[in-house]
Length: 368
Image 1: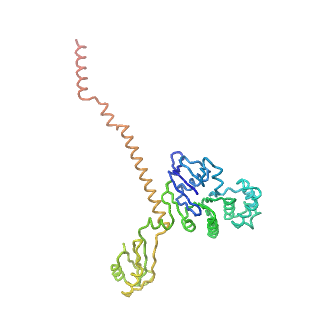
Image 2: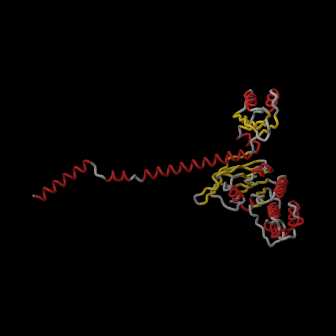
Image 3: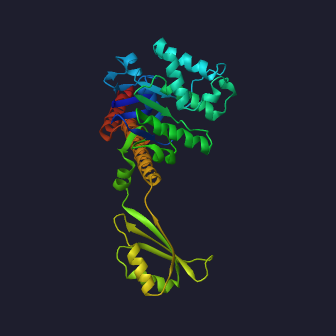
């Protein structure tokens, strides 16, 4: 459905998108994750033809966005972070205007507008001025214009920014409904939102694509450890004695719990493939030490995101430091130090001897 090949965007000396490539298949919800300034919005703006790339190409449903812009854009519905709304229009007027801009045939415009009004639940607000709507309903109007004409690809840039929890859930439900007949691309830096609705995740950091996979595969691929926490009734020596008999436990920690009298907190790490819950239960029961609570912390998308973006940040810092070092070395090679300049300017021993001899001969000639 979408092919992005070696995409690069440079603003002056700043590289916003750095040679990224990926392919998006039809019928999925794709999540673009990344810190602020990572290059998400720039990538989406290039994909929609809103801005041009410095290099690389984008193929939308077989059409190059640069060579065949009208054919490519006809396949896309786009909701920018700030929806392009006309506040002096009513909801219905705006959507009819958008239908004309999208060149929907005149005979089908009324039905197309009615379809998106029903989809986004704007029936009660169709004759209201957009200026008088809440932020949540303005966002719905923006979403309605994006899906108007039912394009095959829906691109949504931060669709839930500034919405309350109830509005966020409603927008998420709409996105899931849209995915049944469309390829949806959702950009966000809110991890819960991406994990709640997306089938596939792309993580961008510093303009680089650092990961592309399903949430489940990302967790399996990038996480090797998990954590467990227990609350056990017993003393620290008793609990440590039990833990020492169980294989696979890493970095165990046992501390007194001040809220539960006679109990201790237990925390340790495990290999992600290891499950010791039953072993723990039987071992502590055998020693008469009741387990009051057991929490198994599985790695989350947030853990993966932090790990990958931190690694990319560190890599970028190291590259910058190396570039500075190379510039300094180059500068030192081109510009000799003050001592070197003085040494080079000083005449050699042989040259000084020749100069002394010449002066001596000149003096003798002048005296004669």
